Amino acid sequence: QLYPVTEVYAGWLFFPVERAEEVLYTWRWTLDSMPDEMTLVARFLRLPPIPDVPEPLRGCSFVVVEGIYLGDEAAGAELIRPLRELGPEMNTFATITTPALSHFHMDPEHPVPGAGDGMMLSDLPTEAIDRLIEAAGPESGSSLLSLEIRHLAGAIAEEKPDHGALAAFDAPFVLFAVGAAATEQMKASVEAHLEVVREALAPWDAGRAYLNFAHGTTTGQRLFGADTYARLRRVKAAYDPQDLIRSNHPIPPARPVERRTRRLAPARARV
Image (cartoon, rainbow, N blue to C red; front, side, top):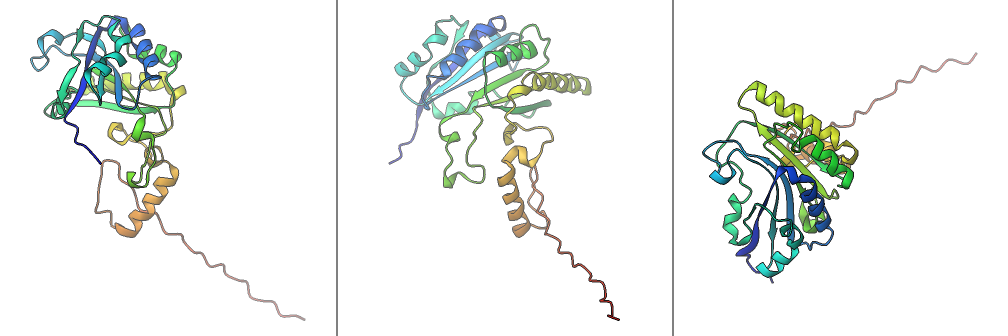
């Protein structure tokens, strides 16, 4: 029997961006003991000095851990205790209603000019964290407003018949970074820093991309895996050969196999 979820324990822990190493190390270490009911996300945030940003955060840079726990407050607080003991500048964790989650990630309420991209990671060892800090941390000069790494586990890693064409993710982490792109110069700067991040984490590239975070051009195999992509192309050819159904990452119909008839040379007459 299924029960509706009306409340969760969720919030943010804000630390000065200069503390990125200890915060990210602790966050990564705590993931090994987290139950599926807890999701923890680590982020670099460089918030612009604009009125839409709350006053305490306006124009500041942080390393942040945000989390959502499907359980009671006491158990959730104990799970994040190692992070709380680091002494964040601000702790917003509390029991909130599930409708409040629609604003939880602090995404813009209205369309804004931006550029971003993501990648899935096969692992996140200490060396990868060090390279990430070099690429996007306090001394990087990064123009990215947000860079986040989400830990994937639980139901998203379990392949079941009712999960659709892309039934599970075997990569344990997904990264997404974004920056303001109000001008061509700003866009070029963001894209340059995106490339710096991609190069830094290239050794841990899982070879796959997540549809929601794939803002650049990529291959269907990278989005769905080779076998699933081939199957989707066959479905497209059977049900939408005129390509009426469109998407941000379109799937072309599979081409029919051409049958070539070999011409036989005329038989020579025997003498």
